[in-house]
Structures are given as C-alpha cells and as structure tokens.
Amino acid sequence: MRTFRHVPAPAGVALVLALALAACGRAEDGGSAVLPDPVGSWTVESLTTGGRTLHAPDTARLTIGPDQVKGNYGCNGFSAAAAFSGTSAVTVTPGATSLMACADMEFETAFAKLFRGRLTIDRGPDRLTLKTADGSTIAMTSTPAEPDAPLTTTHWTVEALVSAGTAASLPAGAAGKAQFTIAADSSVSGSLGCNRFSAKATVEGSSVVFGPLTSTRMACEGPVGEVERTLTGLFGSGPLTAKVEGRTLTLTASDGKGLVAKAASAAE
Image (cartoon, rainbow, N blue to C red; front, top):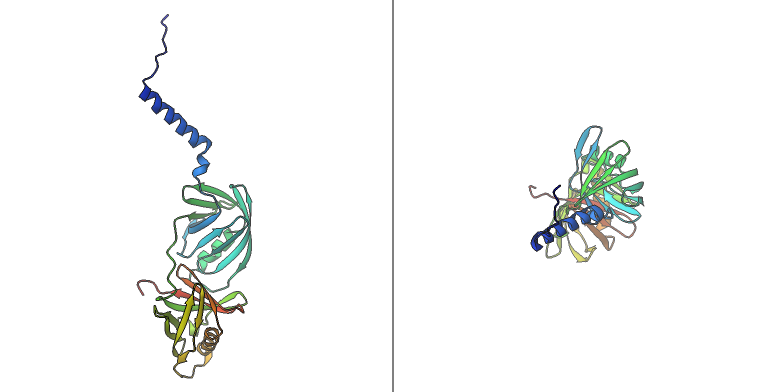
C-alpha cells in the first residue's frame, strides 16, 4: 500500500489559504456587521402589494429611531411608534399625519396601509425591505434622496394651509395661485393668490420673519380671497419656523398655523 507524506505548502500559498479561510469565517460569523442598522434615514423606492409594484415619489422617506418613526408618504407627513424585535422585525403603531389631498393618493394610501403592525426586516448593503404578513413589501435604500431645495432663491407654490397640526389642501379655485420667492438679497415677491405682493425677509437659521407686505389692491372674493387673507395674516404673524424636506417647504407660526409649499422643478 502506498503512503503519502505531508508536504508543507510554500509560504506564499499557505498565506493565501489562511486569508481565504479567515475571510470565509468573517462572512459566516460576522457578516451581519456590514448590514445596515434599521435605525437611520431611508428613501422609499417602491411598494409591492396585490401583485403590483408602485414606484415611490421622490419625497417618500422614513427616519427610523429606536422607538419612533417620522416620515413622508410622498405628500403627507406622519409619525409612528416603533417597537423592535432585534433587527429582524418591528411593530409599527401609526400616530399623527397631515391630511392633504395629494396627486398620487394611490401610493399614499397603499404606503399608509402597509406601514403598520408587525413587519419583518430584510437587510442588504445600503438596502432595507419591510415585509407584511401577506408578503407585501416596502423597499428602501439608504442612498440620499434628492437634495433639499434651498429656502432662498427657490420659487415656492403654496399647496396647503396648516392649522392645529393638520394640513388641508387649498380649495380648487385657489390651487396653484399663491406663490413666492425669497431672493438672495432677502427681498420677497410673489402672489397671495389674487394680489401681487413684495416684502423683505429676515432669515436666521430656520427662522423667517417677513416685514410689512406691500400689495396691489384688487378685491378678491371666494376661495382665493380666503386664502389671501390667511396668508397675509400668517406672513405678518412674526417669526415662522421653516423646514425643507426635498422639494417641500413648511412654514409654521408659534400658534401652529402655517403653510406647505412645493418647489418648482427644473423644467418649470
């Protein structure tokens, strides 16, 4: 019977083998270290439900904390409580949400329906997928969303008015008519929905204070007139807190009243 002697591998080959085995061990034992923590900021890419895929608008996003989630369904903002089971599942309890009538209500409604209850978590490099009990999914990426529009030099169109934490879309007769721009030199110009106006603004961090408004003097009735009176009062109410998310601006007064505006796209 033949016998075989153990022949040591050359030093270089032995080193390569050792590194390969070590890499395999890390992939098996510590591979989860490279996977993302669910806690963080996520851009929603799509939903799959009922055999269909719904692609998300640019503003759909989640900011997941240890016990709370804040986000945007694509138009309406919302908050929710979150209870994690390690990194494999999370139970979501919806909280407050704004109530605007939005252009893509199909996506909004589906997102709100899926993002509740117990969701299992699948993680991959730069990706997170939440799955419902019936197999529907919310696919997300940690790739940064569209950069926030600058507060100044952006043409803003008012889409909703805020009262007591609830945003309501402008009535049909006034939609798209109230617009304004804060220029680089802090001058403000635009339309209150009926009359043109101008003013000066003081911007310090997230605080915006509008100076006295100068406007044309057309008589404005109906929904346009109501919106104009509300905006005139808001702009003259003192410091407003500005928050920009993507192409959406919220200006809020200390009493909770405010507005939601959308930035014009490059094509506009």
